[in-house]
Amino acid sequence: MRVLVFLRLLIAFSLLVVVPNSFSQSYPDRTIKIIVAYQAGQGTDTATRYLAEQVAKELGQSIIIDNRPGAAGNLGTELAAQALPDGYTLTMGTNATHVMNTYLYPGLRFDPNKDFEPIALIGTFPMIIGASPSSGIKNITDLLNIVKNKPNGADIAVPSTTARLVVELLKEKTHSNLFYVPYKGTSSALTDVVGGQLPLIIDTPTGLKTQMASGNITPIAVTSLVQSNLAPGVKTVVEQGISDFEVIAWNALFAPKGTPAPIINTLNTAFNKILNRPETIQKLIDLGFDPAGGSPTKLSDFIKNENKKWGPLIKNSGIKVE
Image 1 (cartoon, rainbow, N blue to C red):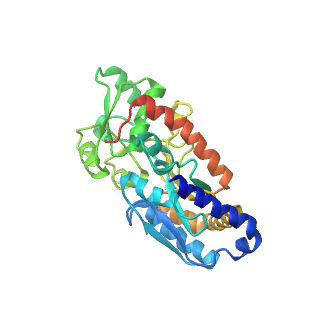
Image 2: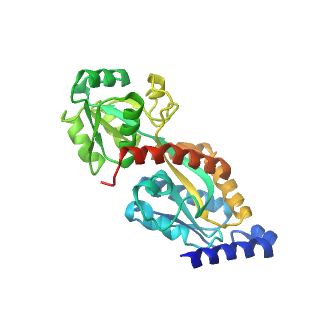
Image 3: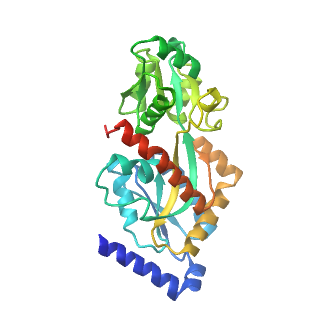
């Protein structure tokens, strides 16, 4: 592994020193590959395919998607970390692959903080805290009052690790007696909450969209700092009196460590141009993402803050991979 890292850095150094101008001016001159560490058809994959098609037109070169699912995203991310830093292999990372998995999976064979160059934050999406209408819970105040008046607290259906983190952060911020009930997916969790077996669920806007529209789930809060286009009119947890509460999932583009800065800048410029188009903004909202964008430095700072937030919480709460 050390030899591989050394060779990658040596190649990157040679690219920067020997041909900095010609290399950056000719890039890209062949097909770019973006590794997606999830199955085809999953949210990250769908959004990446759309953006790749648009950015390919901007760069004048084709971009293909290489789906490498497995090990909660770790398999594909490891492959991306080992790729040559020449700008022709990228990866669409997530809050799981580039932050949370570091604390959930001991012995990772890559370091998301050391093995990648940030390019751009692509999109974010909050989680929604939803309630069964039969629970009588319509907002965060109702939830906290019920928890205070019930010795056994409240059970919350949780179909993902990110949803579990919402529960843990709520517990930390409010000192409330909340209990997560793990589910393997949204469908089974919704069945129990809509049926009244559990009062609450935490999931993505896309996952809850249909049941919210039909009135089977009442959205009581969104976990972003500001209200989201993905859940119009739903108040944030912060707006309901709990300060500094934010849990968002995200997608961001990365290159292997050592990729020359001119290439990073070319990619950043191209993706930001596409992300700022009105049709792209609407398409990503339709796919369940709030479009982001910004500089590589902005993404780097964002990830540092994510690590500061979630590292201690995951460790202190004892969250384990279910």
